[in-house]
Amino acid sequence: MATIIWYMAKSKEHGFKSPEDSNLIRRFCINSCKSLELELDSALTNKNALFINPDRITSLAPTCSGIDKGYSSLIAKYSKAKDIFAQREVKQEKEKEKLKEELTSTIRQEFASNLRQNYLDNNLDIKVFASGKNNTVLTLKYVLFNDVWSNKMQKGDEIDKIKELGFKKLIMTDGYDWSVYWTF
Image (tube, rainbow, N blue to C red; front, side, top):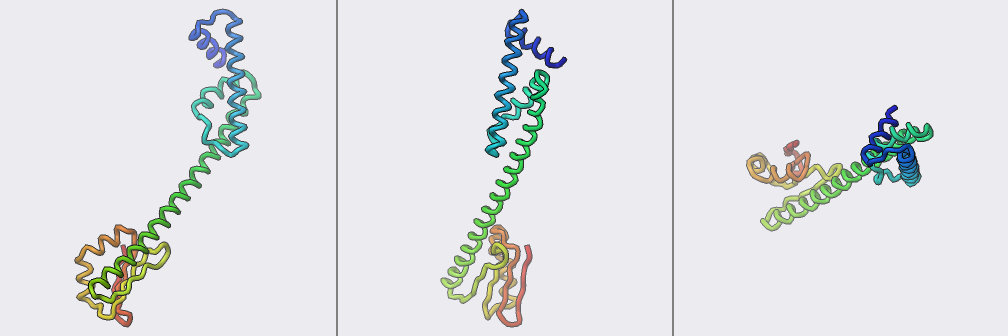
C-alpha cells in the first residue's frame, strides 16, 4: 500500500497522469533499487562502507521491498555495511589514540632531556628520567635533594608544566634514603 501511495505521489509530483506514466515511474524505481543493491554489493565486497549514502538507502529500501520481495535484502545488506563502517570507525579511533599517545610520549621524553640540559646550564647536576608506560613518570635525582627542594618544587611552576605534559607521577630522590613524589 505504501508503495502505491509513493507511486501516486511521484506521479503527481512529476505531472504523470496515465497508467503508462506510472509504469515509467515503477521501472525507474526498480532501476534505482538495482543500482542501490549493486552499490551495496560493491561496498561489502571491497569492505568499503564509507561511500554508502545512508539517506538514499533508508528512502529507497521501503520502496524497493514493495516493488519486489527480492529487494528486502537491501535492509540486511545496509545493516551489514553499517556494521563494517562502525568497526572501521572504532579501529580508526584506536589508531588515532595510539598515535596521539606515542606523540605525547615522545614529547615527554624530549621535555625530560630539555629539563636535564636546563639544570646543567644552571650548574646543577640533576639527573632527569622519563620512564614508565608512555613515559608518564618523571624522576629527578640529585644527591643534595631535601625538603627545601621539594617545597621549592611544590610552590614553583614546574609541577604545572609537568601536569600539562601528561606526566602522572613526579619523583624527587637523592638516590639514597630521601625521596618524595607527587601523583597527578
